Each structure stands twice: as structure tokens, then as C-alpha cells.
Image (tube, rainbow, N blue to C red; front, top):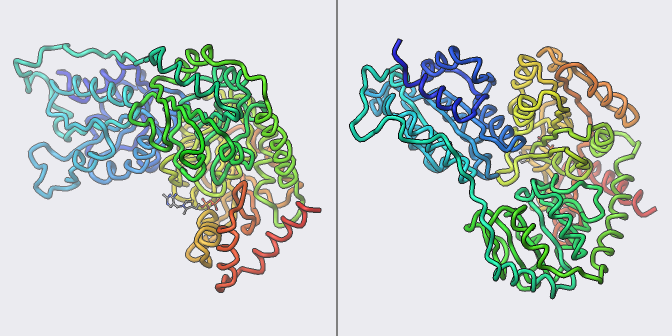
Amino acid sequence: MATSTATLLVERLSAWGVDTIFGLPGDGVNGIFEALRTHEKRIRFVQVRHEEAAAFAACGYAKYTGRLGVCLATSGPGGIHLLNGLYDAKCDGQPVLAITGHTFHDLIGTHYQQDVDLDKLFIDVAAYNQRVMGPAHVVNVVDEAIKTALARRTVAHITIPKDVQDWSLDDQPRSSANVMKHSADLFAGAFPVPPEQLLRRAADIINDGKRVAILAGRGCLGARDEVLELAEKIGAPIVKPLLGKAVVPDDSPYTTGGIGLLGTAPSQDALTECDTLLIAGTSFPYIEFYPKPGEAQAIQIDIDPSRIGVRYPVEVGLVGDCRTVLAALTPCVERKRHRGFLEESQKRMKDWRKLMKDRGTRSDMPMKPQVVTYELNKLLDDDAIVSADSGTIATWAARYIDVRDRMQFSLSGSLATMANGLPYSIGAAIAYPQRQVVCVVGDGGFTMLMGELATLVKYDLRVKVIIIKNNVLGEIKWEQLVMEGNPQFGVELQPIDFAAYAKACGAGGFTIEKPKEAASVLREALEYAGPAVVQAVVDPNEPPFPGKISTKQALHFAEALARGERKRWDIIKTVLEDKVREVT
Ligand SMILES: Cc1ncc(C[n+]2csc(CCOP(=O)(O)OP(=O)(O)O)c2C)c(N)n1
């Protein structure tokens, strides 16, 4: 039988080392599914329940493995469903290839069924975006798509009309210019080293600094030793945006942990008080947490020159990957004898850790959400893979889960979308079946893609899903109250028995209601030989306050309560209890 476009596609993907595709079938991609069926020994197809989850799973796979993630969806609605997960990959700089079907090549643009112009729809999300015109076109297009995704750490999209998938080279000969086998399945990465002169300028600025801080993001994930070596040499606290949580272990004496609303007070102090800032591998978006422009001399390392200076008026930009650049920069800087800035951060971290422990070991009812993540942290393996969703859970996960050794941690950073947590864990568990994979999600985020529990069961992915159940879209409730000064509105959720739902899907289902049950139930769930859900019923009125509350936030909060917040007495009681317990 003559080789079809779809077969050429699958064989070329395989030649590039693609061995996993996340997706869901449809009539617009039946040709590709037939090729996947006949090549199932070379490429594993992982069927999800919603195409958005396929894109998230591909993004999670890319984040945790450092490899290309691939997702596949049918024409029209399938492609539309992919979009949010693809934007997540784009925003967090992950290489993901999306493959979609299209309607018949000669009915495109005629209002035919599922005739959605996906090549227009994907223009913004995909750095490479092409429609395959025939079997002679597909190999070249796959090569360019994969190279673009890898080189620019972003999304590429190819769409193939339904009938074109079945065409063969016998019916559709090559054009004379398209010489057979002219393009290579080779990706050559760039490893630039900044010139000596720039390294010297950066080193001079660091040498002149009295209070130097390092903001180390996801670009430093492969540069743990280099970041620690520099921090040690210059006595600098390492502040970690959440995507960079695994850059250095949380118990390192050099780190003040996370930054931002869900970060720590010592990190906020370090960035407010530093006179010199090294921004490495991050475009951490929240500008209000950086030093005020002009108050610190700053240097930035980034692999992407267009990101230099995006958040802070830096003096020197060093383009390259953080590991290479730090290895070149550190020998140029002088060891600092005065360690006062670091020591002050360390003292503050001691107090912060004590505060976190006090909050994490509370025994009052209703159970505080942080009790769950505090106990979970103690039970995680040293190479566990953790994913979190957007919401107050991100705060509880960021503050209470300590990265140790080879642990990995991620969530939707720049897009900050809900619903990524569970599909990320599918990507992780497919890539690393032997490792412990845990996702921490809210009841709101989980319900958005809860069908994916069936995916865990189908493939026996032993992910443990920890649902912090507060029956509310908590993050937005607190934003309305504290950031906006408005009473809460439109945020309450209809409760669901997630343990019963888990069992109905064929997974384990556990419930924690009391703090004293937390450790034992979590241990039982983690040891459960299969996917499992733990629903932890928690106090909806426990605030995820930032490390430091500004006067404006406190005023807004008071205003919102005064302006007819129905649950004000419950909220006041919880917040007062928290405060009283912390000052006594
Ligand atoms: C797709 C999407 N829709 C809406 C939002 C806005 N949003 C951010 S967090 C959040 C609430 C999350 O609620 P839940 O998952 O229950 O977690 P909680 O905040 O209660 O811990 C919402 C609605 C978002 N980030 N993404």
C-alpha cells in the first residue's frame, strides 16, 4: 500500500524522538489515528477526555522532561479546545507541537461541517503555524514545526485536511523544487556565552553591591550548583519565583523561598532592601515586588534577548542559558566578606518557618487548608513530582511543600489558568511511571477537567490528587474582599462528594475532615496502589494573605466587610483567631 500523508507524519515524528502523543480522536483526524494504530509500538497515544487536557498534559510533559510535548485534536471543536493549554505552554516557554485535522481540502471555506479556520485561529498562539498541502509537504513541515518549538521554546501547530491525511505520494507527486529528503531531523541548540567585557561589567556591579539578591527563575532549573556557588560567594539570598521553586532546595540556607502574593515575607524584604539585583532566567511578572526602579543596580541573564529589561531597568544584560552564563560570571566576582544581608534574611526565614509551622499544625475546626499541605510535605518522596492549580491552593502548595533533592514542581505560571494541575500530572506520570506524582488542586479547578480522573484509571497512572475542598472559588473571593474592597459575589460552589466520584471512576477515594486524621489518611492515599483522590474539607474563611499585608489591602478588606459582606462574622472570627494565636 502506498505511504499516506498520515503515515509520513507519524514516521517523521518518531524519527524526531516523539514517543508520546496526548489527544482525542474525531472524524477530522481519522487518517492520523489509523497511522498511529499501525505504529503503536513506536508512538504511544494517550487518550484524554477533553482536548484542553491534552494540551496541558503535553505542556506538563515538556516542563517535567525538558522534551517536546505533542498533542492531537480533531478539526473544529477539538482544535478550539486545545487553545487554553497551548497558551499555557506559550506563556511558560514550553515546546509543544499541536496537530489538528481540518475539513476536506476542497470544502474549506464553504461552511461545511467543522469548517473552522484553525490556521487563522492558531495564528497568535503558535510561532509556527502551517496547513499541510499533501504527502510531499508533510515531512518538511514537521521538521520546521519541531525545530521552531524547540528553538523558541514555544508552540507550533500543523493542521492537515481530512482527505489529505489519506493521500499518498503515488497520487500526489512532489513539485520539482521539493527535492526528496532535503530537510534534517536535527535540532541544534544555541549555547551563547556573553563577551568578557559584559561579564566584567556585571561582576563590577555585583562587587560594588552591599546587599545583593538573586532572583532565580525557571531558566535556572538546570543550574542549581551554579546558583548556589554564586550565592555562597557573594552572600546573597536566593529569591525564587514559583516556576523556579526547584532551582535550589527549600531548606538551603541561601534561599528565602517564593516571591509574590504567595511568597514569603523574607523574600519580599530581600527584594525591597537589596541595592543590587541579579535576575536570572525569569520574567516574573509582578513588577510591584521588584525593587522600585532606580533603587537597585540590576543585571539580567536570559536565553531570550527580547526578555532583557522587560521588568526592571537593568544595567547589563547577559544573553545565554543560566548555567553557562553563571559558570562564566562567578569566577569574575569577588568573595564578599561582609555577610550581613544574607544573615538578616536567614534570621527572618527562621521566624517565617516558625510561623508557617504554627499555622500548619493547627488543630482547630474547620480544618485549615495549610494543615493538609504541611502534612503532605512530610510524606513526599525526595524525587516526587508535584503539580498545582491556580487558586489559594497555589499559596498553600508554594509555602508548605518544600522542594528537596530531585523533586520537581510546576503550575501554570504566566497564564495562571485553572485546571492545569490534573493534566500536568498525567504528563508527569506518563513520562515517569516509577516516581511519586501528586497534584494539589482546588475544588473549582478540579471540576473543570474532572473527567481526566478516568484517564488516570485507564492508564493506571498512580497519581494522587489532593483536592482542597472549600466549596468556593477561594482566590477570587479573597481578591474581591482584599484587593477590591468588595463583598464576595459569584464565587460559592455547589459541593461535590469527590471521594464518591473517584470511586465511581475506579480510583481510590479518601476524605479528611479533621486535622488529626490528615497525616494518616494522606499516608494511606499515597500508599494506595492506583490513582486516588483525597478530598480535604477545609475552612473557606482562612485567608491566603500575602507575606506582608499593605495598608491598602487591610483598608480594602475592612471596607468590603463593612459594605454588606454576608459572611463577615465568620470571616472576622477566623482572621481574628489567626491573629490572636500568632501574637500570644
Ligand atoms: C480558566 C480560568 N478561569 C478563571 C480564573 C480566575 N481564577 C483564578 S483562581 C480562581 C479560583 C480557583 O478556585 P479553586 O480551584 O476552588 O481554588 P481555591 O482558590 O478555592 O483554592 C479563579 C476563578 C482562572 N485563573 N482561570
